[in-house]
Length: 162
Image 1 (cartoon, helix red, strand yellow):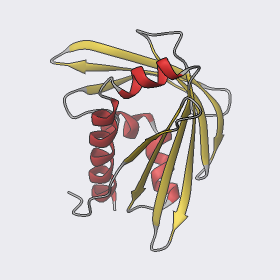
Image 2 (cartoon, rainbow, N blue to C red):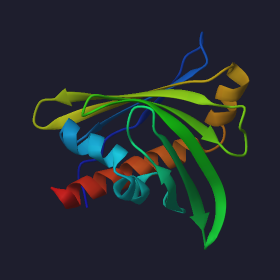
Image 3 (cartoon, rainbow, N blue to C red):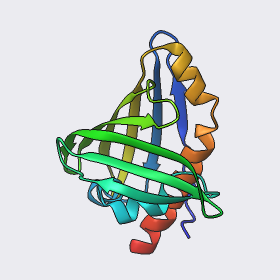
Image 4 (cartoon, helix red, strand yellow):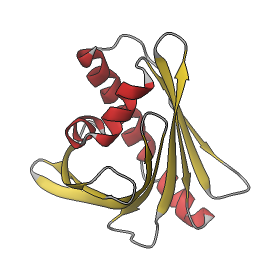
């Protein structure tokens, strides 16, 4: 288990309907990027600890698509899908992110992998949605727990791989 605890920042802009997530990891950009595009790795860490993730579609390339479902106690509780708009190895991923229960609330997300000293990486996720109501609904959905716990699981996965 990773003994280094990093803070996850979740920021909402007052002027535009965005959510920015910033987190540092004790892994180089290549390993962190791989954990985002390898479906087996992604399923191990994404989301809160109370759910398991089943990847149902995964084509991690520019122009590809993805989908996954979250299960709790053997029952599907949520599913998500989107498209990979740009996959630039070890640098950037641009994808859409849609919760199946709110198909009009499509987010455009840009993930950047910033190399830091000592083999570390700062991940920035900028999520743009159509309006403040959608953004505020996402923020109040408990996504902060899913993001924070997911990144803690990612830390643990990266530590095991090291």
